[in-house]
Image: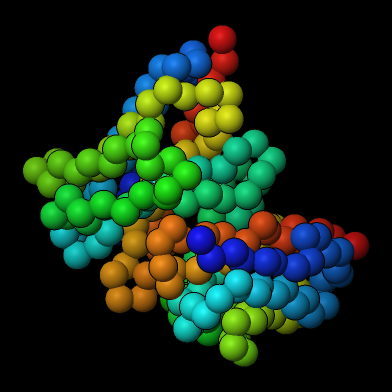
Amino acid sequence: QVQLQQWGAGLLKPSETLSLTCAVYGGSFSDYSWTWIRQPPRKGLEWIGEINHSGNTDYNPSLKSRITISVDTSKNQFSLKLTSVTAADTAVYYCARKQWLVKKLDFWGQGTLVTVSS
Amino acid sequence: DIQMTQSPSSVSASVGDTVIITCRASQGISSWLAWYQQKPGKAPNVLIYDASRLQSGVPSRFSGSRSGTDFTLIISSLQPEDFATYYCQQTNSFPYTFGQGTKLEIK
């Protein structure tokens, strides 16, 4: 059974760096792409970016200058860093697995609420 | 970016009803569209992918279709557990984009 377990700091001050990690248990790590998505309170979903096991990334242009997604294949983990956060980055952040061929997000982490407040 | 226009934003229905939710893409996305269900405080779950393929384990009362750049999610014979928020997502090109969501409420 595939499980994604994520963690990271939940309270940040403006200008700090958001850092989240997602660990993958079960299944093959190298056969999928790994995605980050966020959801501001009471709002819809926003795709942040994704990475494959080789480290190839695609980012949302709206965040590209501030984000880095990285992968550690030795630990079956991938991470998100978002610099210079503001209140607008307050959201629940999800990690998810994407299948290459059919491009569906079929397994998700539990979500991490990140609040940016001074 | 490809814009996904989802409608309605909310709908009220009763158990046993049929509900139709639509998503329109701002440009062609072939059949690269998935539908997700999200319940409060939970991560989304995939229902439909490739516009019309039912995810394993999802009840057959959920179905999806495509006509050009218009996509439809149909929920037949609504059950109490179906009251949730539904999102479409295009995966034709980066950045992948979601519709605004449809909140399905009990009438």
